[in-house]
Image 1 (cartoon, rainbow, N blue to C red):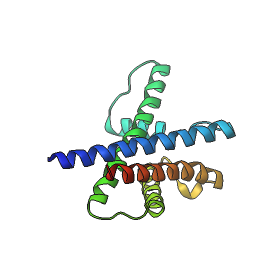
Image 2 (spheres, helix red, strand yellow):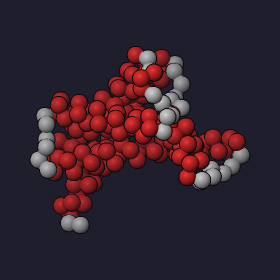
Image 3 (tube, helix red, strand yellow):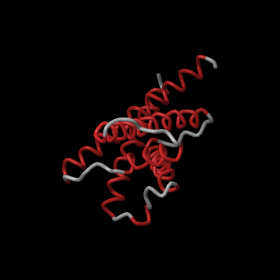
Length: 158
């Protein structure tokens, strides 16, 4: 792997990490303002995958619940960083829409990338979501996409 490729991957990962921070901050602000609980879908996804793969999650009931919560959060971080890296690779091909269009496309891609596996696993069904549910998912993903695209734009000019 060339040093140019490594730099590209690092820029993508950094942009994805920044986007994930924006997504988390937006989500936590929404939770604070509306007094709503955290989504249970990341935890249910971890439990489903662990059960399906035959991987036990050890500990007392409380320890196991804490591990599942942590693994759900780590999965979100991994998804965000990975998607930022993929965006950087796509941009390498010459596909670089403007900041707004790029941010909207990145937002949609991240939202689909995050929700499609959970939908396929029957953890959630977006057809059953209320307007509030859609907004609680779409707004943080918009923050992710716009932030990730902005960071990539700025790192590309370094």
